[in-house]
Image 1 (cartoon, rainbow, N blue to C red):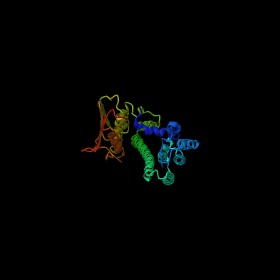
Image 2: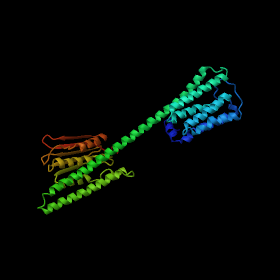
Image 3: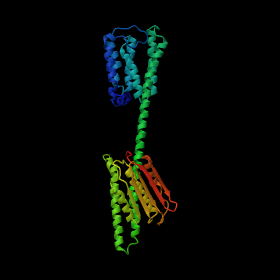
Image 4: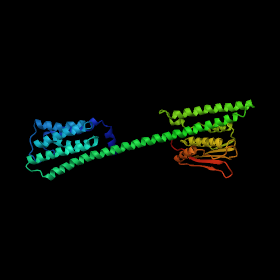
Length: 385
């Protein structure tokens, strides 16, 4: 059985031409059945009249226009109202009179412009019909009856307007969700660009600066230029990987750096002139989600800051893989040249803190008492992407 909560969704998926057609055909068939003649709406107290050709026309005018209610609501309401007037003034009292309430509900839901004018025009037409029925019926129907019937019609209109408001609110909610999703994706891409570009470019700048002073040592100069070339190639590879993430057909399995990338990252930093001690304990879990990627980014950002702000200082990297979490600690003693704040502009560390927080972990980046700084992160493993 279809859940009631899915009924509005299924209703929206149906073409507007088909939404009201079944109701119109059902009313048409029921109104033409002889056993159901004169069992419909009775307004004005006029005596019942046997069905004739004009009765069939009145029934058709009330039922068939419902098929176009979603596309031409005002026209359909006018035709249904005309058929209803003929039905009541002639005393047929057919089941097709129910179509007027359905038409008002549909107009309240679909009409986008001239809503107030439509309400005023319909109300004026109803008043004229009520007066005519009151006169022809010699007061058989009290004014309270006409008012009550009008309130029932107004209720049908109000239900349609309410549903229209709900639909508009849902559309706005979906628009906001889509906008928030796009913003989050832009932020994620910006973080990836910062992590990839900043680290590699910083390493290349440091190596290039060192090369300026190695003209008297061709062998060391060649090593420095080779390191710059290798770093540039790695930067291109990482950028291509990041651009692949923008491909809609790109899977999530390549988002995590392959095994051994941490060691490669440390070796690259060493080539840039930064003494790094690297320790990795434990065995990575079979399913770490994005935890290992975040751990990689933490080490990458910390080493980049060490190159920028404490070049030449001793740096220690410790990564421990536990059953449920990955812990990372990168410390620099700060005794090298340009030793200073670990954060620079602060965007990289702030982005890392947000990443770790999303996975439910802990992140800190603080100065050390004796100089330098330390970055620590505890990242729960198995977190979803």
